[in-house]
Image (tube, rainbow, N blue to C red; front, side, top):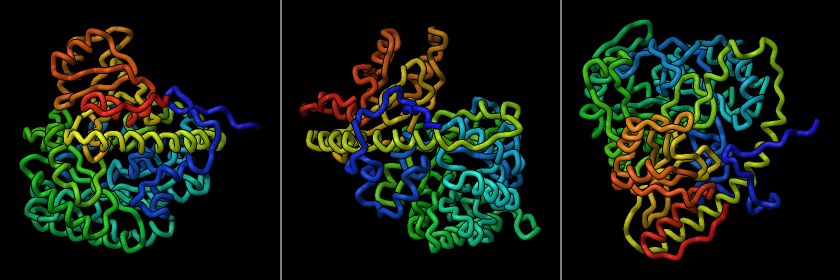
Length: 483
């Protein structure tokens, strides 16, 4: 049977006539990254900003038990429409997880990574984590495996992670000072005992650093997640960044605290606020030159499925999956052929766009929010967007610096004024919005808020569109269209 025709979600197929060696996947490798590292991250949407435009992850909720309590966590609450770590709609056994992974792999050709991120702790609930990975490797051996952990039990399982070829581990590290940690963690459970206060935070800190060092020594890539909690650890995260860089962390991901009262967390109930978008960006900017930052995180649910920013988990509940499923690799294989061409073309376009922005010599920066459905292109309608990817164009070039989650403004052809006001508020600090299409009314209201909205560059590569806008703004000669 021949493989089915696959196109990118961007609604445009690759324009390349062939797959010459100069334009295939490896050409997208950053110049400062070793080829061996690139092979590990090039298809991992969390470890590579470039890959997140094309590849999807899946989390299976097989590890509900946890050994610490965080003031920002309440795993009992679940709303299908929210994106928050630790949240799931249904917990799975290892056997159920395998069935679900096969079903997703057959229907989501972008799938490249399987992760276990709870809803408790993957290392504490180790038997379920290990059983799931062992069975998945037999069914779909090319899937990358990764876990997310608080790090308390991590050192006990590093050797087994190596044996299973798990080469991506995320550790949540919110402090390196136990005095700060005591304000974040009420208790931990370690060696059959419950510890509280500074003592609990000290033990957790020591175990996290030991686990990180052990992983680095074995060549396993680590991503450090840190929750930014204003007034608690926001300034302290500068020190955290130094510590994890010194111990070999591959990425540092600073995430905003989610503390809605309805979630029932300690921080939510006591009124602890999360950071504003521009506060988060300001902290990330201060960390420039430290451990490399991840800026495209979506704070995924523990049962997330699909591209970052496009969670399809509710399409794959157990009740919707057949009891008997057989893996078919054809769609995933065909998709990778398309992506190899498209990402090569995009690498060329990005390089040209970056050089144009640098050549402008304006010394100024521009914050651009992009409505995109994937593929690294401007390809979403403003009214249909549920998030905007935020890029900064500056003398350094063009880089992704974050995202803004919004409520979808247009439903059934109609837009709600109240929703539009919320979208505009979420775009605070943005200079330009790029989208595939926008109506006159929202464009005018955005203009009234000091934000220019443009749909002139629909289906262009994101960087090409941004460089064209930047060139027009600051007097450089724009690039020709590439879409």
